[in-house]
Amino acid sequence: MESSSHEVSRRSFLNRFGLAAAGVAAANTAFSATEHAAGTFPHSVPALVRAKRALMISLDGICVEGFQKAHAPHLRELMSEGAFSLDTRVVMPSITLPNWTSHLTGSGPEQHGVFDNNWTPAKSAYPAVRKDGDGYYPSVFQVLKESNPSCKTAFYYNWKPLSYPFNEKYLDETEFLKNDAYAFNYEQAFRFMKKHRNAPAAVFLYSVHTDHAGHRHGWMSPEYLQAIEEADQQIGILFQKLKQEGLYRDTHFLFLTDHGGIGKGHGGTSAAEMIVPWGIAGPGIKRNFQISEPNNTTNTAPMLLHLFGGTPRPEWTGKVIESVFLQ
Image 1 (cartoon, rainbow, N blue to C red):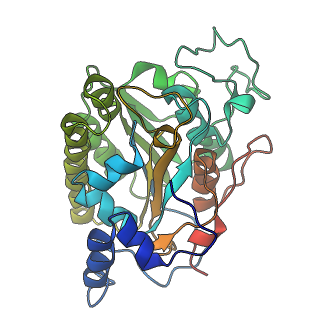
Image 2 (cartoon, rainbow, N blue to C red):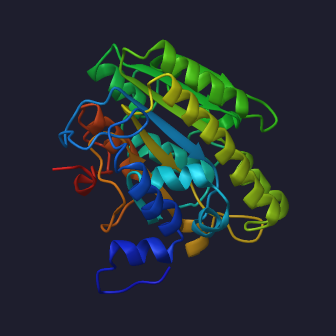
């Protein structure tokens, strides 16, 4: 990634990363006369509001260049509707399980103890700094449930080890799909949010097929870009359903990934592996806002808790990015 000591303007940033057409132009159209219509985010929302629901759209292995070059209009529009970063750092090592654990626990491997993809509670050789009564490091789902027992939580995934670091007693619904299947989980996530529309809800919606396309065909291969585009189509279908059901406008969205890639792999310290996109949108979040301060995947859980009025655990190392909220 290039660096500069001078502040980059929002428009030059958008142009530089290919968000201008899908971002500024879309925003100028979508948020003018129809600004307060169903399916858009309201302007006049206080910075600190209790979220009604939050959806974590989580795609494995999305590098910055892949996000730039794939035809993914729904993800791009979502990023333009909120605050975004294309300079977010992942934790080391740049592999799957440590980084998704860091997203959902607000901590790096030195805190939660998950250092590789073979980790299980039984195989944990390095002790977490804190564990609950069942031996798990506290996740955002646990803290949400403890702070507000009425909060509904769901976890949809298609890579089996992904659930191992999290105590499932704090999840109201889980769904695992085999063989890279994922479209059904998008429908399940919609049904869950519809069913619990009057309760606070946090939904983790994940797919590994994008990462597997990188491993099989190479990062930035046509097949890898196609995998991102296929996911974007499902995201667009989900967004349309949420809008039709009147659920889109008051939902917070986070776009998350765990690492990039180079060649047919990842795990190293190159920028292509360690620097990824990250975004948040919804009521009370600034639009078309470039996050200028350093951002890390460990900030996801504190941000999610902040949306629901919660406080991060003292052992967490992530922080709330205050600049993204409307004042």
